[in-house]
Image (spheres, rainbow, N blue to C red):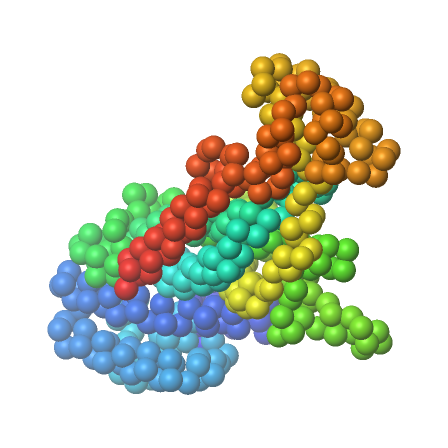
Length: 463
Ligand code: ARG
C-alpha cells in the first residue's frame, strides 16, 4: 500500500507499524464528512486561482461519484488505506488522474481531520438532540397519564414528602432539558472552520476562509493555526455532554429499577422492556435499564481517558489526537442506544396508583403537621420538636397522623383545631405548596405545559 507520504522514505513502513498507526477501520465513519469537506476545499482552491476550472470540475465530479457510491454502499468504504483521507484521495486519483493529485494543495490532514470531526459532530449532535426530545416526549406523556396520582418523594432513599407522580417524572425531564442544551453548546464549540490552518502555520494560498466557512455551514473561522491543529475542546465538550446525559439516564434507570421492584411496585415495566431469567421462571428483569446504568461508566471512562490523552500534548498536531475518534464514536453510539432504550421503557411504563398513593401518606405528613402549628403561631423549631415527639409515639403505637381523633390531636397541643383532620392528608400536603417549582398540582400542570412548549419549539427549530 502506498501512503500519502511515501516520497521521503527508502522503504515502506513495517507492516505491523503501519497497521498500528492506521485509523481507517474506525475513521471510515467520517467518510461523508471528508468528501463534503474536500468538495468545498476544491471550490475554494478554484476561487483562489489555484485550481483551473477544469480541474475543479473534474474533482467535483469524481468526489460526487465517490460520495454517492459510499453512501449507497457503506461496505465499499474499506481497503488497505491508512485512513479515510487516503482512501478518498486514492479513489479520486483512480478516477480522474492528475487533477485528483492537486486536491491536497495547501491543505494538511491535521486540519482535514479536525474539519471532518466537527462536521460529524454537527450532524450527530442534531440526531442525539432529536432522540433527547423523543425521551422528553415520552416523559411528558407519562406525566400526563399519571394525572394527580400521588407518590412519596425520597431523600436519603427514605420517604420524605408526598408529591405528584408527574412531579417526579418531570424532575427527570428537567435534567434532560439541560442535556439538550449542553449538547447544543458542544455543537456550538465545534462550529468553527479549521481549514486555512495548514499543517500548523497556515496556508500559502489566498483562500477566502470566511466564504469557505459559510459554504460548509460554519458561523466562524478558528483564530490561530497552531491552536487549531490540536484543539479538541469540542470533542471533550461533546464527551462531557454525553457523560452527563448518561449520568441522568442512569439515575432515571436506577429510580425505575428500584420503584418497579416487588418492594415498591410503584411502576410496572412493559414486557417489551424486560427480560426473563433462564432459571427462575417468575423473574421479570429490568435489563435494558441496568445496561443504561452500566454503560454510563463506559462513557465517563471515554471522557476521563480522552482528557488524559490531551493533558501532556505539546503544541501543534500530535498523532495522539487520533485517539479522539474512538472516544467520540463510542460515546455517540452508546448515548444513542441508551436514549432509544429509555424512550421505549418510558413509553411502556405503567403507574401502579394502588401502591404509590398509600405510600405517599402516613408519617410523611410530619412536616405538614409542623407547618400547621406554625400557621397557629408556634415557632417552627418548637413545632418540629413537638411533631418529632408525636412521631415517636405514633411509631410505638403503629399508627399515623390520619388515624388521630381531634381529642387525640389536642392532647398534644391545643393549637390543633378541627380543620387539622383535613389539612393533614397527602392531597392537602401537595395543594399547600406555593412556589412554581413545587409539586402543587397547578404548578405541575404549568411545568408540563412548559415542557410541551419546549419540545414543540425545539422540533420547529430543527426543521
Ligand atoms: N488519522 C489522523 C488522526 O486521526 C489524521 C491526521 C494525520 N496527520 C498526520 N500528520 N499524521 O488524527
